[in-house]
Image 1: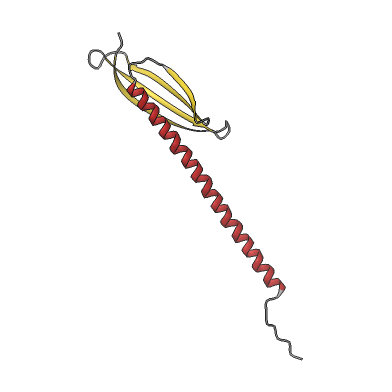
Image 2: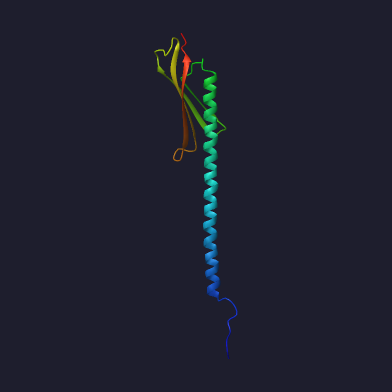
Length: 127
């Protein structure tokens, strides 16, 4: 009696399902990594926008003296502004050079992320 095989053996089916499962897991891992990277990029973008906005506020209100200011924005981003007068002597009469540093941090301590922007400004000396 002649026996004809007209389908897949059980081993072939198991190997095919195993390969499909491994491939699916790899694709899902790649997708999850992409989503995580997009979230981190969004956090950096929002932190940079916040830092730039704070620098602009300092520029607009440059006559007010505030050596250190800090706060929390959106219950996530901790920011800190530090102003440092670099040149007590005047470039021109009544003008001095000031360095303004804005640091924005977020996340927990072991994996805390931060961004720092620094701007140099010429301001009128308050006498």
